[in-house]
Amino acid sequence: MADLDQLKQKYEPVIEKMQSFEDEGATLEDISLDGEQLHLKGTVPSEVVANRIWDAIKKVDPTYADLHHEIATTGPAEQPYTIKSGDTLSAICLKFYGHANKYPQVAEANSVDANNIPVGTTIQLPVLS
View 1 (cartoon, rainbow, N blue to C red):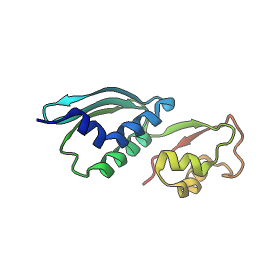
View 2: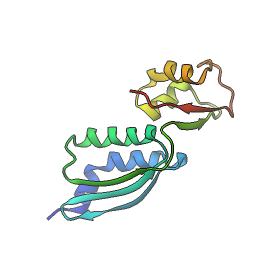
View 3: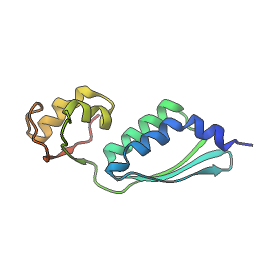
View 4: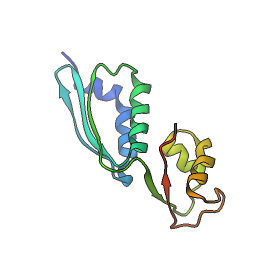
């Protein structure tokens, strides 16, 4: 019989990743047992965020045989982001793509200077491979 606490501990990085995107609109609605699998149910606001969640799942267990996930994408492929004081494009890229070095692609997609984006500017984070 599956142990809920063990599975929650195993998939804690996935749960934490979901929670790290709450400010962007991600929700984690259910964490429970579904037979022998951990059931995670939630929503993410874009394909960009969904890709980060998938990265976390595959890092924990590439087969994810003991995970039943229902993670729906509720918005567009791109993720809007409003620049806040102290933000850097590389830090934003690290959070949303897992790689800080994606910043030139994001800057180009938004036609902005990566080193000079005014606070309050909303950029679109495109789906990147």
